[in-house]
Length: 107
Image (tube, rainbow, N blue to C red; front, top):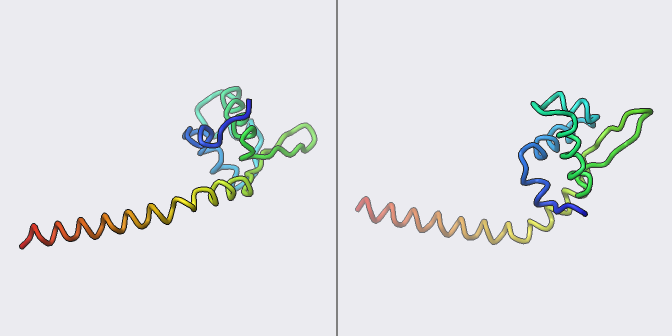
């Protein structure tokens, strides 16, 4: 079953893995050394990220290095962009309202 990207990034460990491999491709063993969990647990997180296409494996001899898939994250960012302008407008309106309330309270 293909995992949902929202499920994948909702987990703090998976977000940490993405942060690590965005800097440098790592093997599952190298990733497991960075966390207080077993290699199997890290492998489960890797599986979810791979199913969502957020990471890509690259075989090098007997090792598998996982790379960050920036293209997939860019697709996600483009999808979010449609909401970003709306959020910014609403936050600006809220800022103006709070400023007005604060000014009225000090008078």
